[in-house]
Image (cartoon, rainbow, N blue to C red):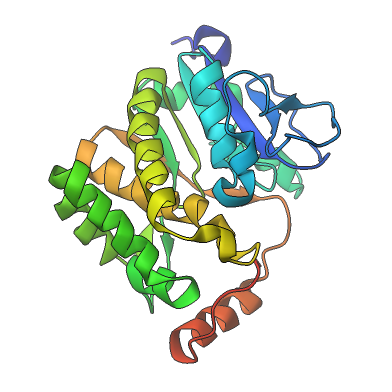
Length: 267
């Protein structure tokens, strides 16, 4: 049977990036300079062109890239990954270079023949629920405010929200690949909620690390949306382009839980 290749599905995956960095040569990937407004060009597509919210990048993180893709791309399937995080491919490739492990366009098309959405495998916290982890490392009132907005505007999502907040793992990083019509549905829902959150959270008084709360909350809301909509999805491992500081992550998690020390940087 002939394998369905990327050239037979209209797929484009944006790679959120804020500096020049190695990029895969596969044409399915589109490097996107997020938070580009007011900054010098780095020879990637910018997120301050067309309809955009590039100025919100200090608070929305990679979501300014997702918004740009939603408003300006017309591909049948649209995805989001990061310059330091990609979906893993289906086949083992020779060598130990992590760049050889990245999902190819053909592999992506093969998966999308049988599913609507691709998401990362769940990330587990073990000693924390999604709610308690966020509350210990950031501020639980952000999630409380999100719940109140759902209660007012999307009350049929409350059961899914409460369920997800009690879980010890979730599909994180705002990474996804999905059909264009599903992305439109998700983004309408998500960005409406985030705009409402902006009205009730005094985020501009946070330091630069904690100010990125909208990007973080959206990671959790994505799980709520997935559970509510019940669309078919497949999961893939995440390939990290740089070494993950697991020991420092674990220590920070323990300190946040037991010593009430908020996160002040990423690891």
